[in-house]
Length: 477
Ligand code: FRU
Image (cartoon, rainbow, N blue to C red; front, side, top):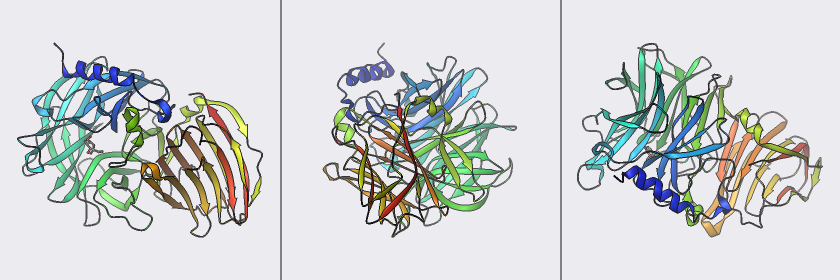
């Protein structure tokens, strides 16, 4: 019998033939063809890192959600596997929405949201339920059906993240109760039977109407509640994207309420980072990956037969100021090829081309802030994107200008207090990820340079820029 899963795998195979590779990532995970959004079920299981993701295999637009699947030995080189879940049961007939994975003895268990309408698709007819599927080989999954039904009066109830504690399994789920975003906590002894424990966090009038993709985990001596609120209004430089992703810091113990100690802060400050999910590597590192795109963004790669990609895996730490730091996982160094020193220590009203062509690259650029007098100085990526210090606003800016794709504008973060600004920058075919001062801030944005518009140049406008360090690695990707 031709199941929906087989049909979906065939569709991807066919669509893949006609991909235009111009913006297809060389060292990030993206769908082979069709659409990708949130990372799902990130886990280390049986010798591999597994990444599942929200996937529409039939076209590069959002549609009935499947779970795409890839695995990797090192989080850097990914191997595509058959689609793990298709919307083929009555419980998930309109989509297998986001969720997570746990290893349960020798089994890999996926816990995800079944999305279904009872009647015509509209909010009143929407029912979201939490479902389970298990596997022995990490590739083929057996559906176990609904494990938590929709609570009375709630329609948006999704994105379960499960983990294990002494007392058994816990799950956080996002919910929209009236127009309040919530993260609810559930508990279970066997992954099949769950009971509601309490609500870990809830929005006030500024924090949106729905909290998607919650995650809850210990870091240093705190507990982080990470989630993606919908409906927050922009405030100055903050919350500029359609939806946000961010975190609260607090204290938590089993059987107690979550004591929130610090207000919401954004995870990433670029144009494109959403629905991050974390997992633990075998050596104990807490790692996070997000969707490197944004809802309702034009995503020009749709014209090429695919849409959406995941961020690089980032190691999470919590600093003394209560700020999450994200740094690229050390495995990314495996990609480094030739190191290229850019012989530039100072620029005065200048633009100097440092690389030609568009090879995937990692850049280390250290700038001296107090000694630099230029109004703007930094790095150009072709004509369309810039990463630069703006001295008047004292901010580090990531700017893109692709009016032909209706993508123009900037995002920025304050300059750190130290005199040295340290930037680690990864550039792939259609993305930049900037790690500022060892992960104090990150800015991740999609870029769409034309083939002959990928030269890198350093520049200073109206004054001098002092460069401490400027080198790059070509990445073997
Ligand atoms: C977040 C999200 C989730 C949902 C999924 C659907 O981007 O809206 O809440 O499960 O995407 O694809």
